[in-house]
Image (cartoon, rainbow, N blue to C red; front, side):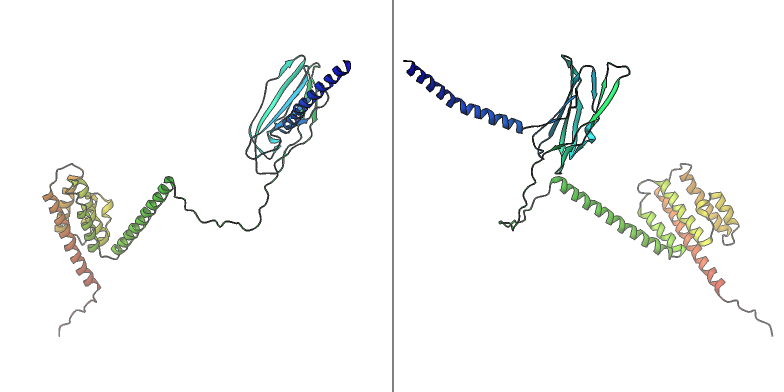
Length: 346
């Protein structure tokens, strides 16, 4: 009976071991996988326990890299870590902060936590840094420091280089532009059109100015008078602006034909200067005085004007310019002809 009982017990133990073997093996595999999920480094010295953990186990370009440094010391020691943001290589610093110290059962603990973004590099590491330790039991505090070793973080292997010709011929695929791109093109075309129009208009104005410089004073005055009438200031009831421009046409003609700075002078100053000029007869001075003073009443005194008065002023300006220009041409011809010798009586 003892023999049969012993055999039964052995059978049960064997069956139990057979069932537990997969569980144990699964637990070992799980422990191995957990170990591979993070990196652990011991940076301790003496009573100062410095533990670095990082995850994932390898630096991956599509994941942030988390580094945690846990510092534990006796309560009477004060450990300080430097700013480690410039000690990491191959990363961009997303955030890096330190927790408040916690004292429990005579052990002071704090952590430094950093979230890093991998760069396109193949070397990722934490350079050595100094840990400063102060003994608060002594006044002044005794301060020592020690340096840690370099921590290399493993990274994924570079992608394999594919060689050989592609098996599939890639055809071009047209991607329609976005609305923002279309608006940008439209704005560019509008800006280009405005620029071209400005260049053409500027070139035209330069041509007009160059052509006017080759004109006689009379032709140039009539060209300015034509542009003034084309603006239709009288039809718009802008009498003040009209009379200002009309008198300036006459004043600029006088300046070009007789070298009197009429545009910069007041009416009285101009009449005084013209009275001393040999080409201005009393009749012409009376005509100009009436024309300019009546225009000044509209420009400066606010006198009402009518289209009939404006037409009359235009006729006066046109007649004066034509008559004066003819006299100037005759005088220029006489002065340019050779002097005739007086005849002697026989």
